Length: 404
Ligand code: PMP
Image 1: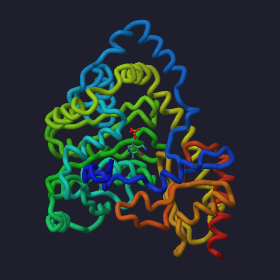
Image 2: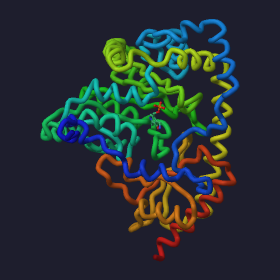
Image 3: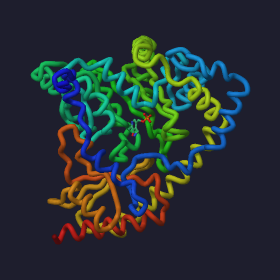
């Protein structure tokens, strides 16, 4: 069977990332890993979930095990709508579609908006998983620079020349993966100006929003959009949320919040793709969110905040001259730029061999494969003491590479 001959053209864009393959090898007990961008499993609200599953099985086992509506479990959508109102986005359950993690929302939005050859505006770097989701729909990427001076006409002309149109801008405005950086209010307003001028939607990926450790919260882009447009039904921002970073990534529960007209289209997509997200998982998330969301996320912020501070302070102590890094106010990541001439992929091999530490080389997060002098460090899973030790080792590897 000539499989290559029968694969659809979109498969040409769906390649295994070298980095992901390499990271699979890192699961060795003596490696201190700053690579995985995952929540600390030791902080999962295990007991609350055990109680929730027991309650569900005692009271509504049949409903939990049955098919359910594509829009998602009603009480969960109500809880989310209330939480969206708390962050400045007044909406109802009809503005919410439950998805299998926010990753599925990114896939659906790519499917909804991109025809082959259309342009998606993304950061350089941006979330690797967003590029992976969009790639299946064969877009072209153009570089979105917050506060940058390229105008709408420039983006539109470049997209036309490539045979398509600009279809959306994708951003993760709070403590982005991979940079840890946050868009200022001005940058958010500037992005809305650009989106208005191009008449395109904004995909706002809010995966880390609940994990702010210091500084004032900045309103979500959807909030600013509603203030301009008069309400969620006339907004152009599609907000992707998730319980993965707060309650559990394994249960795969996320959501999209946006105008009903768009949600209705996404519901059709959900019906065609997988009918609905797991009923039992949605019910469990609804129970646990109602019971402990506020105190649990407060505990997460306290714990991760100490790890973030430990990493920033250890970097200050151990990095040689010429290394720069981001100073995140939340999330899970610090983004590091190496001195000129160093390649993060080469450095990773050396770091693994000689110091038994791991990180993610930055090039994978660039749509054009640039950024070889950058790397992502995650502080979510290590104790402050391990972080101190790990950054000391990283400093040694960089120093050795500089004299080599
Ligand atoms: N967006 C960003 C920025 C992420 O970092 C992640 C998880 N790595 C996701 C979306 C997807 O998460 P999930 O599908 O678990 O909600």
